[in-house]
Length: 225
Length: 408
Ligand SMILES: Nc1ncnc2c1ncn2[C@@H]1O[C@H](COP(=O)(O)OP(=O)(O)O)[C@@H](O)[C@H]1O
Ligand SMILES: [Mg+2]
Image: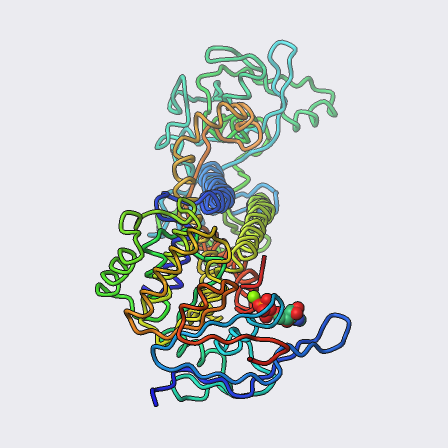
């Protein structure tokens, strides 16, 4: 059996709604992602996909359940310990590109390396290669405000990969893009992930994209089906 | 470089732009506050020092008095004081108010004596060229040197004659004698640049003064000028020890204590008011940074996801406040020196020279930079700006990545 990069065991998560009742969003989710494996996660809006992603990323603590990164249990670690591990272990791509507006494309990609404490000449070289890889070699010095949505998302993809993470969590990365651009971006994304053999958890609405991952799951009624 | 330092710098000085609008305005705001504070303090210091010099130059360093009564037979004391190595000059002086008539225009100056016989003088009339349009050596028993502004106010100049009536002449009237005023010729104008003196004082010879005041051989005070660097207070104390009660030696500082205190207080009060400017500046920095935190909620959330710790995110904002404080302070100091360098034309335009002379007794705006003032103004501004960054910083640090990224 191949190496398990990320494991979620019996994850439950409930929120208190403003009027006092509890909403059970996740009711015992189990998931294993192996090295290099890509999994797509679908589900209706409000099904709890983002919540699940946040929980396994350690951005939100589960109500109960266990989370393992690279075999290490992390749900019982402090936030800052999690943050330290996460910097080199995970990459993120979100629907909103979340680029820092004061930084140009290259600097935005490098920022991830800086935060992970891995910024040096080779990181800069790698950032340029990655931007080249996503087809933005001519736009290294462009600010986010000078780029289109598709270009911004490609920068975000390069940023997610720069630290050579074991896994990338992507939450509807093409949600803000038109069909054709979305297709292009997803192409680049999936190709990059497989060429770096990075595992991928991809939340998407698009069945075509979902079909291109090695496994597909659906979140419904708080459990994976 | 720490990444949070890098982000802070980039937010203030974004790529492709020299400086962000926010940073420019904030730095300017702090600079203006520091300019106001440090500038005012420097000018007040200048006043204080200048007034000190003028007071000292016009009143002498140490003054021995006999509770206002005339002193007689003080020659042995004067001789012994002259032998003191710390003493530069010892002057027997007398002074008092008189009425001066020019035609039928009266003035009521204070007459001060000058010992034309010995030439001994405790104020630097000669060294500092206080007498204009004439010379102190031209003064004799039938002449007078009037303050420049006094002369101007009653329209007399060198060569004119004035009549002097002293208060003691009233005694003659009581005895049914007719008092004859002293007719004195103006031989010079006293110009110390200190309007208190220039508009109130006239100099006559000691002999003439004694005659006017019926003093005989007496005098009102013994004025000492000390060598440079001698501690006036210490000296006054030592001298007082050997004086017979009620004679007492006081320094020019004690003599003018109230006036000097007012200037010091004015400095404090003005500083307090101007401190408000810096506080207001820091408020707007706080609000701007806070807005920036709200605007960047998602980016901050993502930094958290990428492994940034809350403490580091907080540092990003605190450091921005700190940096604005430091740069604003430095710019403020620079501006202060620049503007005060061109203070003469600026004052001329804004208030006019006359106002300066009228209210502050000087013809020129004095400035004295004190390191402590600069240091305090900068430290105050920097600390305040850092605090201004602290509130947004805490806000940013508290953001939960998961919630921040849901932010629309
Ligand atoms: N902080 C929260 N407090 C209360 N309810 C929340 C919170 N976050 C998410 N939810 C609820 O959890 C459910 C799942 O949300 P989400 O994970 O964003 O769905 P999806 O990403 O699948 O569209 C929604 O019904 C939402 O209202
Ligand atoms: Mg979602």
